[in-house]
Image 1 (cartoon, one colour):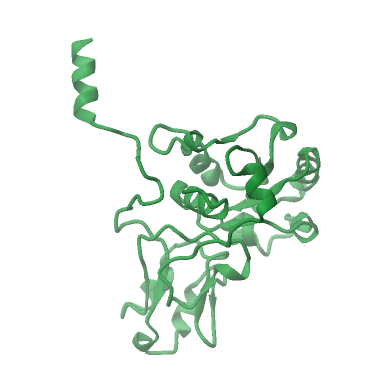
Image 2 (tube, one colour):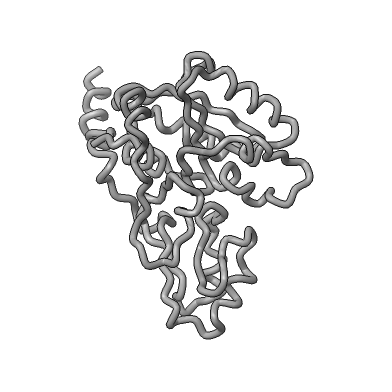
Length: 249
């Protein structure tokens, strides 16, 4: 017993006290920056190196909704024209908001409507729907409940049934096999309800965007409320995005 207490004291405080102001190590690849003057070929090599078409030309920009943060673009241009910072505030309330020319240090979503903030500002239950991904996003969502992040302290939790939820969190590119289940899960959630897309696969299809085995008709029929980029997104990207969107301090 004494040894156990001694170990706990030596480990210190594991919980992150302020999730909005936490910092990540430089190894983390977050918000990208672009220095156009360092391109020796106008960014052609970076365009060719990107496996998901996340780099857009004329002028050169990066679509975080397609970016897997693989850093192949930085290796294709060792002069440092593209670099990734450790900034994790990258969530957006619009798809267009995920496209950056590298001049901004972070992306924050627009505030949700007064009605949504009134309903869900103090308590939000979410049902996660895995639609054919690699489980990387699911692991990061699970981490939201551990002692480090403890998302429940803000009244935000995941529900076992869509009938007890206020919205859905979609992960994966939406395979044909999961398309009907996604529709049915969303229909089972009572109104008003929200849609959050978590990860590059949910936002754009990611590396599966050209696959014949995906069916993204749901995302054409319903507009997402919040886009969380990453492959997979860091838990802090999810927390900061949803807190900003709900105007929670």
